Length: 476
Ligand SMILES: [Fe+2]
View 1 (cartoon, rainbow, N blue to C red):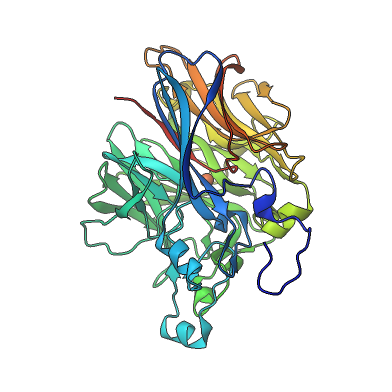
View 2 (view 1 turned 60 degrees about the vertical axis):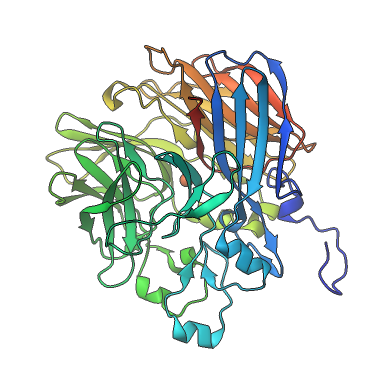
């Protein structure tokens, strides 16, 4: 749609381009047509997030990560499957619709004016929770990299309220990738503290999210952009890749958060191995590279293993800007890489686990890290209607991999769901949501996770945008 008196043009927009396009209705539902047979044991809901709205009023998202979020849910029961979706009704989305662009986002600038900047050198941060949705107690919480976390009603996908902590720690940035410690039944998260003495602060909190406690902090000098971290029984593994910032540059700034981070040529990656027992930090070095996502981490005797999806540098961040996505083919294929952290050496041993790159890693967490042999993920080549994807299974020991591709369908993160009575690693399915590039249809493909073959597909007549993360909640 053209604005005001601007001439109509035929130039494609990101919101009209597969696999990013979203349904026009802000809330809706569709029944699915099933091909194949849904596993009788698979009952529950797959919840997912996606950046969906690239425009609101005069505002335009300049980066994929900044589009206003949508939640969607595939319900699977004995009658079949259906999908529900709903825009994330964040305070920021409502402000943008009213012409107020005054909160910091990932890469899209604010417009606060000189007075607004002077009166609040540190801007408010977005609550556009478009990155992940995780269970917390009896609710769901939608997350982005922000101090704001939105509590979601599982039945309606509406925002119930912003999550409120009962401790005295005050506002702290959180990640969209907190880790759940299954043994302690506690969440671990990392907060980038940008004011005062900049540091990465590790916190833990209970399953309901009432009280946070500080486990420890690490000040690596310049602060790295942190999207995820490694968690083992002993340690929290903080990745300080050489894509970092001096937080003072953020004061009074109108630019997006990530625009303050710069690649430090010639620097290595540093890893802060933070003890969960006493908060002490040991620093080790790894080759330079950029990491969005950790595959897995575990203690291995006195060593610690951190498996990551490694890009050679941070150029992927700029490649995911909307103008680049409309202009270039963007491959999302970081290399699965093992960093072995030795007890007695300051340098990790770095080994590529495969030449086949992928993102959005999954493992079977019912199996102890030392015994795990598999990881799954999705390789993406984003090229508008010619985009391609492959869901990948990787043998972590041999490097062998298996691909599942479907012509014309672009898949996001495959979510592993273990069969309830499984005894072996990987006995279950992958739930992969894909968008068709040639029609406004989407599919939930249910793959046998070991054979990497589809057992069923649930097709819906709606264009679901390529999304980021989520998880499966089993029916009670
Ligand atoms: Fe992520």
